[in-house]
Image (cartoon, rainbow, N blue to C red; front, side, top):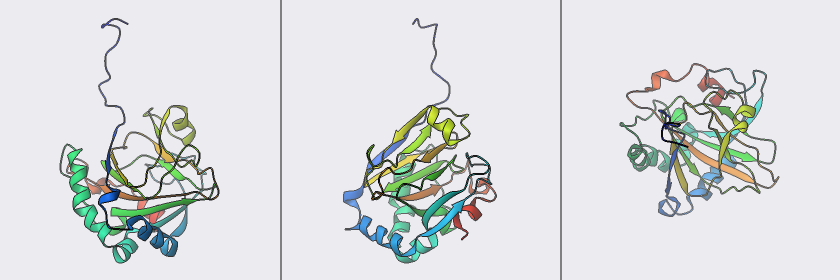
Length: 224
């Protein structure tokens, strides 16, 4: 291939930044969050009614999560990290200052998958910076990878699978990325005894403010 036959694309490919923070967090932090999940997690059914959804129109996907309002009461240190150190880490990978959300539910969520029937719905993000702190480790054997499309035109989970990268969670790792243009979902677990748990964090910015959050998203994620 000669230098005139190919040029790098103008748009950056999907990329992420990882910090290994588990050993720096409060003692038994993951076990404390899993205990909150066992006591407070709510099961909901996701329907793709908002503009950021990337699912078939008739999809009905069970979800299992703990809302930010509950996390604020049960484990307030998660919000101290969200608005403090974690935000500072996220800003190291961003081109501008990050903004916290206006409500606890929009800020943090604890998402859990157990068994082989659950997955997290396919979607694109509305916020420019997503943070994920993993409580559990997953592998090719257990399943539970974050599946991200390389193709920016992907509109369904099947289209994501056609050209995707898979990121397997590692307990104690904190990921930051911008997936506003890359559809992604979490694949089902492959073992009935496996558990996947992640603390999710949403940040906005001056160039992408919270006011751009899609209508109907809160209803789908937080209503019972």
